[in-house]
Amino acid sequence: GLKSWETTPIDVVEDDGCSNMPTVDGLFSVRSPDAIAAINVNGETYIATANEGDDLSYGGFDEKLKSKDIFSGSSLGLVNATADPIIFDPTDPMAGQSKYFNADCEDAADGPEWCSDSMRMSIGSKMIDYSDPTNIVVKSMISIGGRGITIYKLTEDGLDLVWDSASEFEVEGCKAYPWAHNGIQDEEFANVNGTLYMADEGIRETLAEMNDPNIDGCADGGDGQPGACALGDTVDERSAKDGYAAEAVKVGQACGKTYLVTVSEKNSVGFLYDLTDITSPQLTQVFHLSPESETKNPTVAYEERTLGEIDSESILFLDETESPTGVPSIIFAGAWSSTTSYWEFECGDSVSVTDPTATNVDSTVTETNGDSTSTEEQDSDVDADADADAGTESDGTDEEAPIIEEESASDASSAARSLIAAIFAVMSAATFL
Image 1: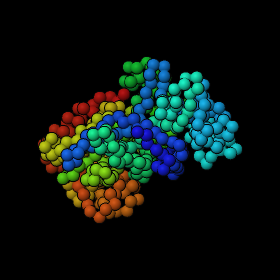
Image 2: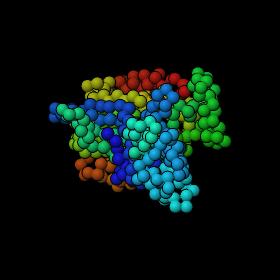
Image 3: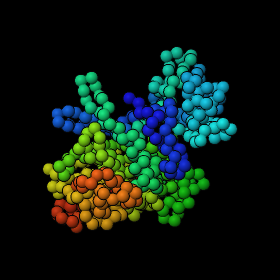
Image 4: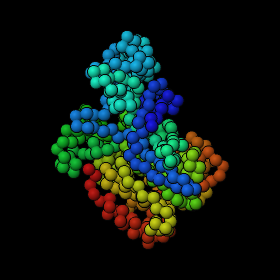
């Protein structure tokens, strides 16, 4: 089904942050999951979906359009089209629900308090009635992507929605990593004359533009030289598109509890949930798989072997019987970074995930990527703002829970972890595309 943004805040405003997250009358989105995970709770089956929001093309038909190309001043940009007047009235375009997304929004004397005329919208049958090809009707406003995760219960009649993360990804992700909020790093940030550039002629023009500071590049790519921008220079660039696009989702057992983990595709922000109550999951931690991307573009960070994971399409959740160290762990694989990392749970007094620049103290998550270790102590009863600054999220309870820790070969079980480190060093030796 559709996700409503009429009562749930959404960041569709490109203001270099998340201070303006309005609710929008008449705006919905197709969740468009990229991955699902089955969960068994007391004999009942639940399905968790990672609502990435990937749009599709069919031959010459492209599913998405910028909203300004649909609501174009006092006219519609679609052939043989009319609209529900609540959404769009050609005699008074700033009175309809589409006023925020109209091409004339910013210039209209009676325009609204904010504008997002580049908002990506689906022109599929959920938004437009095509039953009469000579008079198609815009009946709603549909964006693409659910900007989070959803849990359904499997019943005899199908799937019943029991919980949705609402705005939690955008709100808590921005608190923890404001420099990564709705930002982007993907294949288009590869360097000129690199592997991808040489292998694919079709992307060369795009890569040239993305590395040119006079077009879409930056004066400093992180090494003092012009090139593609770092993630920290792209804040809000996905706000009018799909926001936090959860791509992979995995569920597993650790420390006597069931956890769900997912990572946003473009900005590498991860979320760990405690599923003790399947109808009300608790956000345990917000973490980042590529903290170096705040100031360095992918090529620079990769050459320094500090990149971490970008576009984490694959996640493995290993319980204690599957883990090579006998400790519950998670492996993340970055599709575009050509890197992997290994994280372990530590069943201490609190649940936390640390970024790869922290220092190991206690109750932490550790990563093994062949050459670096980073951890950080987190307490569940500290102030929420302090949690956000540390890149973590309090669960809001007095009870303290287990944690995951970025593991290094120098810790316990050193033989097994040394082997893991060696394997990951080899796996990460490919050149960033």
